[in-house]
Each structure stands twice: as C-alpha cells, then as structure tokens.
Length: 444
Image (cartoon, rainbow, N blue to C red; front, side):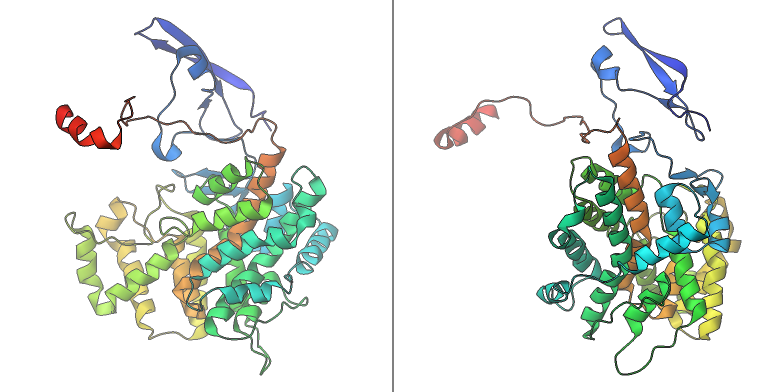
C-alpha cells in the first residue's frame, strides 16, 4: 500500500495584502481525495482556516474505515461492508477493526473466548443502577455507568501500557451489551439476567434483555442473526461526531472508559445515533398507513417544518450501502415474526414503497437509510424506542475503541485544540457597578 505520508505535490497560497506566500504540501492517502497539509499556514501567513462542522478538514490519519459517499462505498480495513455483513459475524468484525486483519480460526476462537469471559460486570454496579430513576433514558444510564467503569477497573487505565489498552478495549466491547441490557431491565422493573458463556454476542444481549428467572428463554436464530448484522453495520463510520468526540477526549490522556462515555453522550444526539429513535417517533406521528400520503405532501412542502427522518444521508449521496444490506434483513425479521398488521410498521412499509418510486424522493436521493430499517427491525423485536440508541452504542463501541487505540499509538497526534473566528466585543475597560448606568447612556 502507498505511504499515506508521501507528498504528492504542493499548493501555493499568496496573500495579496502582505505580499507573503507559503507553499503547502499535498498529501495522498491510499484512497480518497488529496489533502492540503495546512499546519504551517499560521506560521507562514498568520491565518487559520474556518470550517464549521469540520466538513472539509482532516483531523487525523486513519487505517480503519474508508467511506466514498458519492459511490456508496463503506470499507472496514479494506473489506466492503456488504461482504462482511453477508459472510462474517460481529466478533470477527471486531477483531478486524481492532487488529487490522481477519483472524485465523485459532485467533478467532481466542478472541471470542476473551470477550465472552469479560461480559460480567462488577457486582457493585448492580447497586449503582439504583441511583437512577426508573424512567431514566437508557443512554443517560449508559453514559453514567460506562464512565464509572474506571472506578471499578483501575488495572486497565494506564494508556501508555499496551496490555492495559488491550484489556480495557476487551472490557468495553464485552460489557457494553451487559450494561445496556441492565438499563433496559432496570426500566422494566425486572431482575438483571447474567450473561451466559455458551451464547454468542448478539444472543447474549437478547437473553439478558428478554429472559426472566421464571422460565427458560428460547433463542430465535433469525432475530439474533439480524441483531448481529445490525452491530456489524454500525461498528464504525470513519470520523463521525461520536468517534471524533472519543478521539478528542483521548487526546487529553483521559482514561478509555471516560473517552467511550463521551462517545455515548455524543451518540445520543438525534442527528447522530438518535436518528433511528426519531424515525419511530415520526411513524407514530403519522399514525396510520392511510395518512402517509398527506404527510409526504407535508414533507415536500418547503414552507412546512415537518421533515422525514430515515431518508437520505449526509455522507452518502447516491445510496447507503448499509441500507441495502439491512433492507433484506428487515423483511426477514417481519416475516419470521409474522407481523402483518402492526400500524407503525405498516406506515414504514408504505413510506418505503413511496420513497423507492416517487420522483421527488428519487431526484433528491432521499432513499431509506440504515436508521430507517434498523428502527423497523428493533421495533419488531419488541425494543422500546428509547433503547434504539443504546443498541447503536453496543455496535459502535468497537469502532470507538479502535479509533481511540489508533489515536494513542499515533506519534503525530497532540491534544486537540480547534481555533475560532472571534466575533465578540473587542477590548474594553472595566466600569464599577455604580457608574455602569451612566456609562451605558453615554455610549448611546
């Protein structure tokens, strides 16, 4: 593979006001557009760049995930997401994201064993949950509990020690389903169910969420496979808001549990991980399949504030490759559960039908995205909408952990400190409180 640091040309910037100029190197990655290295811009010309949302700014070098939004490409370590979702499983994808290559059988077996035997949480965490209200949002609980892990696992918080980083990474991946399931059980008023070492990652989460001590739990392989696929599709997504939050937190030297808790907090936003929750709220607002037509008209009306959640994507301009994978899974789950007359799912199916044939949606590339279909699947499985983002966090944890490890191991990284374009008041002198009224009148 090409050296991502190799210069591939230069760009010269001339400042006409000062007759100064600087020559900045162009850097090429192994894929994607060339990048202008602007690190010397301020030193040479005294200027910073202004880029709200960092949509045109690269903050790091990464070998983990690559996205081509125009072509609808998503690669984990070079592997197309479609191939991984079809042929792999979540544990194998976790290994790939963490270590860079797919494991052989011995490596895979050892990794699955290590993750499985880290799924238990410290018993005192059971009492920690009692400090939350029963109606607390699961993400509020997860932010608190994940952050609190650093108080229970002191032996894996030294970020300079590779073994500590590995153990912390395994613990976070392993314990996140347990923490999320406990948040769900706590809200339901049911006893916590401990993980079972004979179950797969997705099966364990379903067991801990839905099993009760009074009777045996019957595992549905189609549902566990669908959930495993959801975890794969959400495992990483390049430098998104929550991954960038994890990296920014990690740049300070914060412990890994604090960094992943910060990622959970960022993911909670309705424009990020909360999007699939917003999809179900939207479906509930529409209410009935017969109402879809009038709500579509509202969505088309530029003067109407109503918007359709779950359609189109900020990054993917033509199609979301994850949506094409999960669309089939959604219909498999609905077929397995025999759901034919659930009002919200009927609304969703009608919206999907219209979006795939209506010129308004097609021309604007407003295709159903991964949030649309994952919301349908999780609703069909019986999860309340408040749990949707928590399930997203389970799948995304490995991506956060991989991004955090890459940050720690990158010698070019330093504490993140974005600059700003200041638009406030310039320097003024302090006025004693007794004279401020007169000073304000004089200023008028």
